[in-house]
Length: 418
Length: 163
Image 1: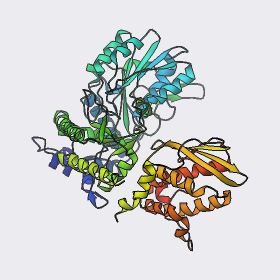
Image 2 (image 1 turned 90 degrees about the vertical axis):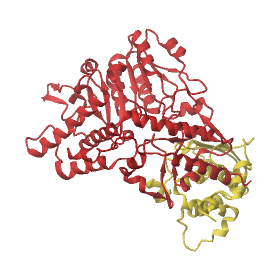
Image 3 (image 1 turned 135 degrees about the horizontal axis):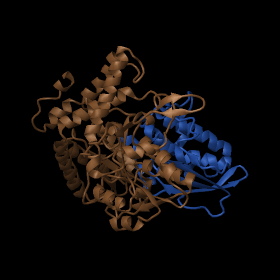
Image 4 (image 1 turned 90 degrees about the horizontal axis):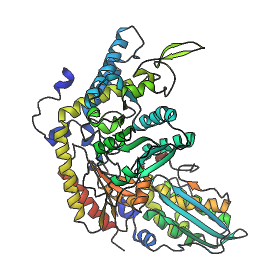
């Protein structure tokens, strides 16, 4: 296939060659090369993904599942082929278990408003962790408000690790669902997700895994994990924005009511009665983000080509190198020092607000995230309003880490003159 | 001087580290809260308003160097001023930090506040500097409603809105 032709021919991990695939990495900010360390917010896109989206609009654009004409057939095939790629990527047992949504946020809201509303009564409990992104907190709060259920939270320790004893203690006969992140977006902590799922299942409690931060770094095998739901976003996985995936076990999805009503999610409609479509279409009302789905499929091809194992090794080297370098700066304090970490290094600098750090770093060409990272309870846990967060992708280099360290030196310089 | 040095001038960092009029105000008859949900900056402004004149003003809260320094210098510059004078000062100040200064205005009229002119090169940071002023205005208006950088900052610069 011509699409893959550009991708073949790399035997080993060569970061400089990989960087060639990402046009934005040649860009400049304030006259300096961009050092992009905000990958946990969104990843950059390889040319293959940009081309796939553009080719779809240029050559195949039509609505899916509707027309009998040639273009619609092309679009439908590309759309459904991408579903197959996602299925393989997460090793789902059945392609019907792959639902396309706008992103992780929509996936979690979908589960809360369908599975949640039909399974939750007053006094029931939803169990989350103290390191969740707002998108895995607020949908459950809304659900609790509607049903009278109660939100319970597994605390974390000073290193940003989940307290497993507390998790086990909090599970009880009223627990109806565990919703937990695999990797923390604010701290980089990797949770022992298998053990969490096994423990919850021992109580016959289903588990939703927020894999938004895990998907770009870890191999997802939903069957091996045994998770009941799994959510991730395309744009953090080098794909387009506005597209994401909800995986759900077929029997659970079958029993759930639809999330939204509209076209494509129905089998027949009369004013008296509507029969819903089968999976996965029951949950894909309206014209979907076809270009996004196709782009996501290509992104998965690209990630597979780079190789999840190779990229994990490279990213781990970057994280360890950055951690070591930042530890050598006395004014820097790391937030999130879990044994198991991936992709993210969060820190604060004595006497300098993260927002000011971000501005100085930006002028040095370094893009990091500063703020609460949509995880205000995590900030509260550590008694800080915000952190600086550098997050890595496989196209980052050791030079990027060096530039970050030098730019932090510049911050100290700017704020030392009083 | 680089844009960065112009932004973080010594006097700004000094005010951020040792803010003037920091803390609660006993006997305050006006109070307003402001926050910037994007970066978590929070500020509370306390006023002792006598008729139309600000007799005393203090603030507390947490935020970046720019918001703290701005609050500190604001409190120092509005004490003993009337409501109308403060409103005029804010208009002029806002024009300076957004780079939308009207013609024929003399920036030197802003006095020490002119030190914030460098922020116009940093559109994403304008809100940090304007938050204390919006909060002060809310306390003068006495609405009792907290102000937020994400609501009602209608005069935000174009770049800021685009961002």
